[in-house]
Length: 72
Image (cartoon, rainbow, N blue to C red):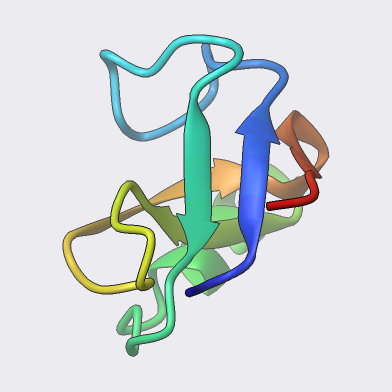
């Protein structure tokens, strides 16, 4: 299982139907530079996450400060 995070702010995520409190997981696959591009464009550190607990695709980006790690 991939590292689990709780969304604490959902309005800046690339996935528009995400809500605060939703669980997301670190994406283990290649994100093709999407998080890096979003970080460069916004000046806010982004990471790639997924709704799949195994860290598989599809993924989306979210600012790192908008999620917090939780115990599984």
